[in-house]
Length: 66
Image 1 (tube, rainbow, N blue to C red):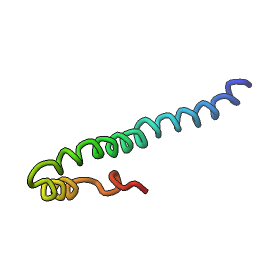
Image 2 (image 1 turned 180 degrees about the horizontal axis):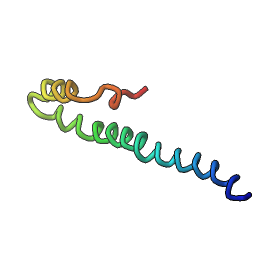
Image 3 (image 1 turned 45 degrees about the vertical axis):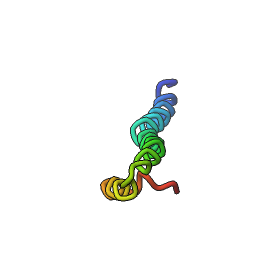
């Protein structure tokens, strides 16, 4: 009887863990790396053009802050 009670609870926590590790964390990593790379790209003499090309290739949803 205890197993039937615990199983749904474990599945909910496992699902949240998988969601966080495979969906949410990669998005956070993309945003963090973008914030590191952006100023470095803009330091280049043609940085604005390079960044525009970089941004055009990216997934806008991943870089949005909202």
